[in-house]
Image: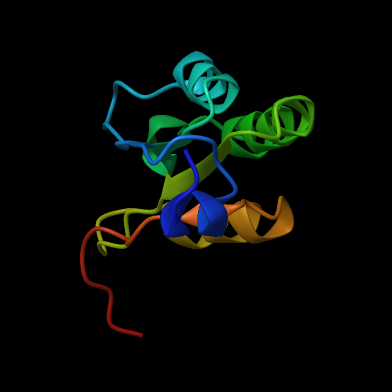
Length: 108
């Protein structure tokens, strides 16, 4: 199905898998990509050192094999998130295809 949304996100189906805290994981995201949807997850689901960067790299490899889908992240920007800056850098370095609107408010 081709719509403005599917064209803009480069996906086959006009579906976005919601980022679910402590539920969304790498396997779910890969399955969503393979099914042609935009699969998203909160970056805080990957809190261990180096975990998010590794997951993003693997998702980019998976995305190259399944061009009908995509993935995105939700970065929690609340001041209580100590990983905000680090996660933001990983997302930029790995060239994450899209980001969903962040949750929380952060004054700069």
